[in-house]
View (spheres, rainbow, N blue to C red):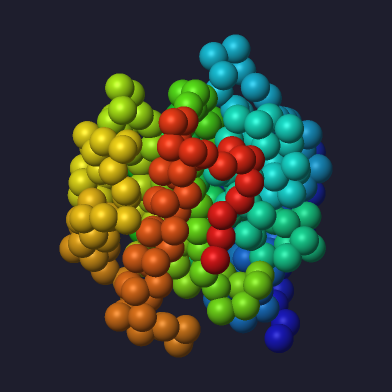
Length: 305
């Protein structure tokens, strides 16, 4: 397969890229990692007049730990760079566990945070992480900039609030309160494939009870999403109970009631729902085990199917 004809231009600065987007936004595609863009060009699903290469913009490749503990990631950071960052390994272990499941090493070395979020494939790990970690996305245009919550940015399968004249420049991940339990699990047909289903869980406890819950799922759904009903089912649960008991069934029932998996060539809706429930169960049990006072496991170790 060959892509359609297009012009190629290398952006010299973020401002220059924004000016090009302002004048030719709908006809331009940005080239970052190219892991999704190039196959779509080859299949002629996209027909841009101009491919604007932003790979060498150092302004978009920063990794900073801000004074308030927020992790700010430039949109051009590669998956592997984020995965190996000491700050991520130490303070956001659920992020490291999820990023380790992205494709193969070659893909992790080329693909970018901004590219994945802008593409918003529901089976990708970054959209799920952005929702689970309550990320804030910085969008810029020639007219100014804005900051938007991940829940507002991701509007559906491969659909976002990003406007044609806008560029995603950075993503903020707020600090996680200490003492949390985390779990991440995903299942794919083969190692390196997109997930058929994935789930991430964060738990906090106080005075022997669960006080805060975040659950996000992805895979064969319209878009990665939080699951408020499943979160509510866990609030107030005593740490002394076994999570395998009735509370887990309530969580899984809430998942099935609120998330309707898609049908595709990889799995039926019924099979995907079963796998998603299994991934949520695995992530929840891992998060519960990592809570202080429950026996615990290594906070840095990953959990995946």
